[in-house]
Length: 359
Image (cartoon, rainbow, N blue to C red; front, side, top):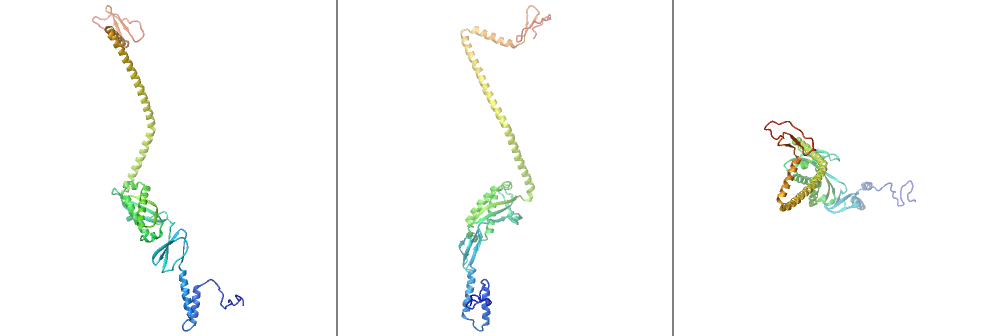
């Protein structure tokens, strides 16, 4: 007899050859049909085969796989025992053990102040979450998102109840504290980077104290708007702030254009002042030396020196004055311009009686 006799489909021991893959359900059904054909108690081996098949099927359900970039937390009797890496693993089947797979590479997003409907984090606002009180008793509406990664799956799953809600509530509390430390103008002036950095640092510290097992990647502030009742006033404030910046820029440009010229003029004036000081000091020294020299001469010949000084002074005075000379015996008037070249004398007619000197 051949190993598989053609046409009969039996092996050398009289059993039929396999016609397909191993099918546990089909085997159990065949056993059940045979048991139904036997009347009375089934053979003892039936219980053993059935128990073995059930046990094998139950043990097979313990195999599980972890994708790349994920981690699986293994639970035995409801207690976390270890974290498994990517690959194929086996554990005790349920209900003795179970596994929970979480992604440690994916960036998770939690929204506060709105409900996202797309990847752009745009959605319907949540008024209760968005309204926040500032340090100057103002109200602003903030919409922001928290981006985080899971770094410790065991802590993330079991240290905090409902991790996403806990992260959202913690972020909301930290943001409210940061907004309360700022003024309305600071929050609404689109200074989002500084506010987001402050919230990110404080939120990470808070989650670390909770043992949440996450790393805060970023805080994305989507919108910061005032209530509708003060929106018109805020627009005026924004325009005034923009005008102030523009005026400041124009003033700075004017200062940049005029300061170099003013600086050069100042240097020139200082140079002229130095020159004038040197001239005045030299002139004063010369006068002082002349006076000291005259003082020595005056001590030796007071009368002559005094007469000479008087003549010199009169010469200086008359050199610049317009003079008219009148003779004592005739009525001839001679104009003597001492400061100009000599000209022929001008003869005047006979003056009336009692006439004096005419200038």
